[in-house]
Length: 202
Length: 192
Picture 1 (spheres, each protein chain N blue to C red):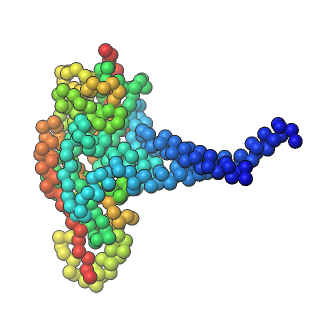
Picture 2 (picture 1 turned 180 degrees about the vertical axis):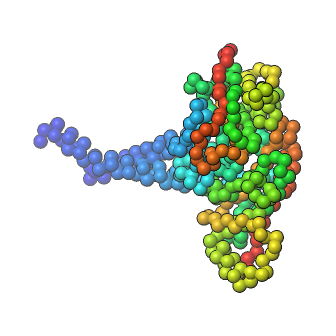
């Protein structure tokens, strides 16, 4: 056997290992990309929402240079956040705005996916009333409602029921200062934002 | 036996390649789904449930909170109209039209997403506070040095990024059809 043939044999013998390394690299890469939104310490859910109890509201500080908040934050946005965990029950979000300045809410899963967002011009009288539920909770509500339609409270007519594909996440309320000196008024408008985990019927 | 000796090398290579590919994919902007309009780029799908896994991972790694599609759209510029990287050693004129929206803001950021420290402690401008020309147009002077009129302070670090956020767009942009959307020009003036 010549030395040249032996080197070629060795090279051919390495091909399966090279392919295995490439496949392993691809698998590792995909696993990292898919798991990072849930695991990254900088992810908004972990950084902003996880320290809160479900239903607890937090008012986020104004974005400024080296404020340590979210990256690429709008310096004119006043934000408030609530965490939800639908394993503990449906989650009610209410917000009312004065209509003077833009306001919006967005419902985000723990991995950051935005499953719903709307602004104050898209809701009746600039009021938000969103009930975030699982599919099972929604089905249970429907069956209860079929049996006792007349007991439905008139005040819930403007309710938007949002079936969430995930049990954990957070709701972000955003209102905007119209100019440099208007941030404090926008920040005060966050008082109209409230959220709570609702009790489910036993 | 010889083949088995290659196993640790293959495992290390897989680990190194996988990590390198992940780090490369998560650097900077979401790799897919960008819509470009001159120097401005936006990623319409990051604001709804159609977001792709790479964009989701990039946003999680960066800690950014994107606008929901019902809230508005953010447009990012890293270059001027002639494709030169934005540099705070130069002055820029941002002018022309803006998206048809209820309200918009413009702010300058470091490349890592922090607002830029400046002596005036002003981090941006809003559509309602702009001084307008008679036809409704506007001119914003982005500069390290104070300027009369609409001044966007740039701070000291050289490289910077502009982000224009259009809230409550009145066009069909929310549906992903960005045709006809007007964005301001970014023109480099003098450099020091």
